[in-house]
Image (cartoon, rainbow, N blue to C red; front, top):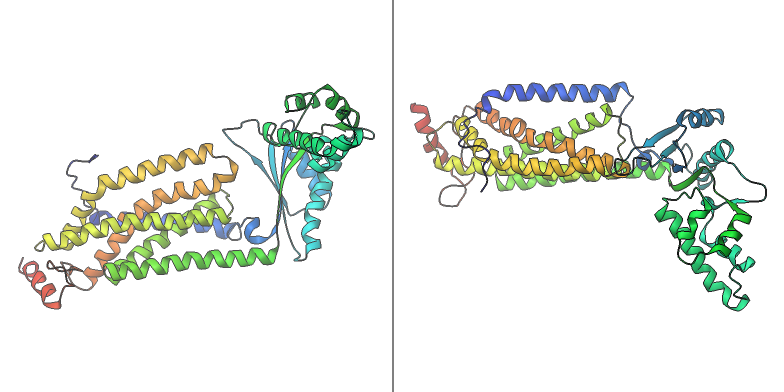
Length: 417
């Protein structure tokens, strides 16, 4: 087994007050930001609204787009530029519009309003021609069949032109990320020749932008999703509390849940500081964080339980310090490798995964720290408050639960010292 530290002897419990002060500072900083910004910033998933993903042929004119949205009365709209190290020239933005109503008409109105702004601001329509980047497969197939560009005749035209239209749209959406800037590029698509290109040039042009995706969520559905996400997190915490209380003691379970709750609150604070939205993918990351942090805490608790049986004459603080030091290499190795993985995902995973990866990146650091600096000190403080210098073991050396007599016998040597 790889060991990063050879017999470390760090007084973790002696430094616990500094851990607590750090946690208080992080919570104050993060939740101060949340209060200052008027609450947690929810994504469209939870608050309801419309997201339109737009790709431009050139660098997106953010200020021009923002001014146009405001001039059309969309004061609550937001613009987020997509930055992706894997695609540095993506030229994409996400336009968000919060939804006020709950009906289907209102939901469609948000999309229509954004499209009206895009068309009026950036449309460069040519007389009598359509934008190829806005065309769908069925309309292209109908056009190609009507013109019979391959000279197949009415009998054989339908299936062949459907296949050709699908080839054109697949090439546009996959090879050109939804935006063709020159119709000549379509010659690289399977089945396309000069006859097809000539017909397309007669009736189509390439616009400055293309809508890649549209997401619409009603406010009522968003509120339900928000409630369900909160309940899912609470249920996960409650289940872990019951498990650890049964496996160890209730004070261990309470300490572990308190540490995980601390991790979630700190992570939410960082989301506010760095202006990230809370979406369904972030909730998935938080639940992953809950399980990861809990696993790390249980490893330390299990080593404490083993050492309590072996080191009956030592004080509980000494037992805890030794247990943490014994698991320190394992903690750093597993947490460090996982941190590197999610950090790469944060830097290279693109905008869609950025919030998810950010939650895990922050959560792994905070979760590893809280297992040592929050969960374990809570258990130690509890036993100190009860006046016990040595903690009763959850399980006796014979494999059964320790009896009060066992605990009394273990406490006696400590009292004599």
